[in-house]
Image 1 (cartoon, one colour):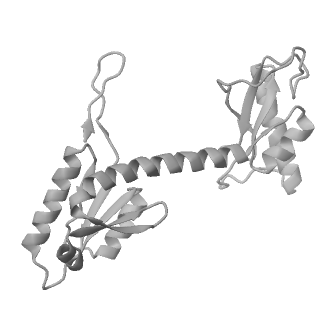
Image 2: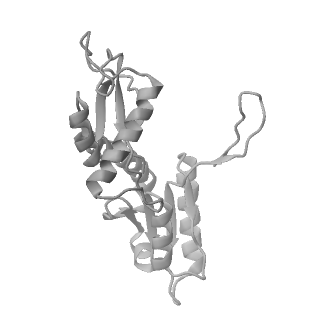
Length: 233
């Protein structure tokens, strides 16, 4: 599915290609009825497409199924459908989840409904898992002394802040200096995948209660909001 969009000036921008949701990988042998495989896979593609599911049939003959599995996993396609000779006999197709590698043999007669339901289920489960992981790494601190150890542990740190640019820059400078000192290094390795300096990530829409007169954790001035800090990866 290709979506054409434009900017606020009405200029047509390059199309956005929606990511695939399902890939179908036929498994053929010398004795396999190629026409039968083609007919079934084409029918599956049509059914899924009509249901609004973005699907691709990988019927390339110059790559084996194992290579295709790896290729589409690296591409991030969440669901893989495998159709082999035994599946054709049983009028079923094997469904494989990318996130858990769980496999299930699904009758062709209910495949579209099963795929649609599983995609919704996967989205929900992945979102809940991501939220749980985020929340477990989120901590609230009030002082600079507690800030740098939390950042060093890879946490997302919520602090009261005066929201002045000069102190935002001071946090970056001080956190970098203290991190390098703790590592026994003088300068940051340019090849490092994760900068050691802390930076502002956002001012959350949902603000915890901020008692009047709460000092900013870095400047000591009256804090005006809660700010989320972390390291860039």
